[in-house]
Each structure stands twice: as C-alpha cells, then as structure tokens.
Length: 180
Image (cartoon, rainbow, N blue to C red; front, side, top):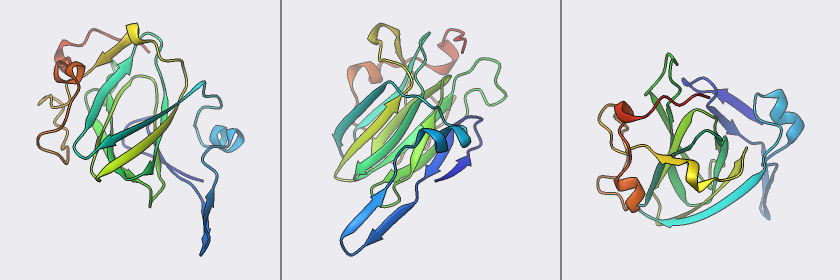
C-alpha cells in the first residue's frame, strides 16, 4: 500500500498493491497493521455501499459531534471524491481536495474527522463502498452546500442530481463552530 498525504492535513490518498493476471486481480483493501503504520485508523465500525447514476452528487456531508472518518473507494465506475476542511482554526479551513476514484486505479481516499465529504458520479453508474470510524447518527448529520462559492469546488458536472438535503446545504460562512 502506498499512502500519500494530500495538501489537507490528515486527508490521505491510498493506492493499494494490485496483483493481476489474465484471470483477474487480487488486492488487499484494508490491513489494520499497515493502516496504522501509514497514519490510517486501526478500527472501523461501519461499512456502507451505495450505487448511483451519472450526475448524482452526494454531499458535502459531515457528522458532529460524533465525527466519522471515512475510507472511500469505488468498486464499479468512477466518482470525483471531495474533502473540505471544516476544522475551525485550521490553516486550511474552507480548502478542498478532489480525486477521481475508479475501478481501474483502485485508489481510496481517507477523509478524517473535521472534514465534509462528497462525491459526484462521472461514469454511467458507480458503486462506492466506504468504511466509517463511527456509527451513522442521522440526528448529527449536516450538509455543506455543494456549490458554495466561498469554497469553489470545481465539480465535473454542471447540473447535478441532488437530494433535498443537499440542495439546502449550509454555506461555509454559516456553519457553527464545530470542534473536533
């Protein structure tokens, strides 16, 4: 496994070692010992799996005060995966990173506590799986506005398919102070 620190402290791009031949491939998607050696969490408590069609944008979600770290990968198709720093007092507050995760590059993005997370589907369909460091608590979930001009994410879709909660997301300037 190769782990690359992104420009946002704690957000990590993970490239697994893939063993392939004419029969297919094998890869280790998570190994506790290697994760700990590379700055990833040693324990996840929930796995999620979603399927979406082209143009669907999910996010930018966060959970507070029971933050969720997420290790995200795409098992079919392609997404543009984004993390936004919402840690009050952070030198990179309001900054974002985005990476294409797909079934060919098999990369994963680790989004730690203190970040909002979202993705949009760039292929016909995409199946996304992610491991979480805490259990989902719907009463603690928030949604940051996906197209907030104060953040300026360069999404690869002009008119995304959004849920009602994502249409009504909160602007960065209106977020309460969320402690990590």
